[in-house]
Picture (cartoon, helix red, strand yellow):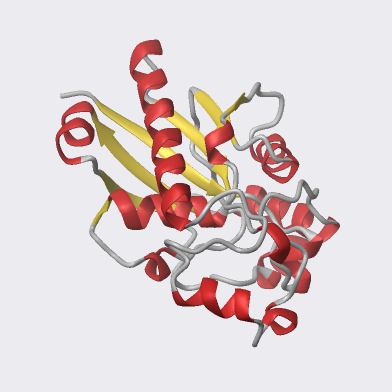
Amino acid sequence: MVNYKLYLIRHGMTADNKEGLYTGRMDVPLCAEGIEELNALCTLYQYPDVDEIYSSPLLRCQQTAEIIYPDRSLTLVDDLTELSLGDFEGRSIESLKGTESYERWLSDSYHNAPPNALENGQQFAVRIAQGINSIFMNMCQEGIHKAAVITHGGVIMGLMSGFAFPRLPMGKWALAKGCGFEIAMSSQMWMRDNAFEYVADVPIGFDNAADLSNIEGLKQDEKE
């Protein structure tokens, strides 16, 4: 049985991330601090060597891929784009609290969508499943055994909670920016069980569970 390794990696920090704003489909670039953090991770840790790089088409993911895997071509996958958040995009939690539309979305985001959003949680789940399936099928057809997938936190958490062993709720798959998870896939496991296996955190040696929100210490270590 042939095993395939995929490295699901979250993009680096943007100004909206830093300010605590919902970003969704807004096509914003990495901020200077996000670029610095990614460079620190690349210096202090090792990202796996890969045969192919797949990326969300949004700028922040393409920029992340260029820093981690410089001078490599990207295959853009539209289905890897972050969840559409409609009128909530560019807004903070504090500014939305108490509004009817926001409370309705929080109560059941699987069936409800923000105003003017393109999808609800259920449609998002179907889309990202199509995305990972198209990547896996391409890897099988092209003989690609190791690939990086540069995408968004919501996409990665949705994929891991929906398809990864061990089975864990979405919140347990929270991850730091610029970091992610190594997964192992096989044709039998994917086709029969619609599942893949969690192997390790990425980059090699980084522990997502120990540091989810900031890597200030990493940047300081790099300077010292």
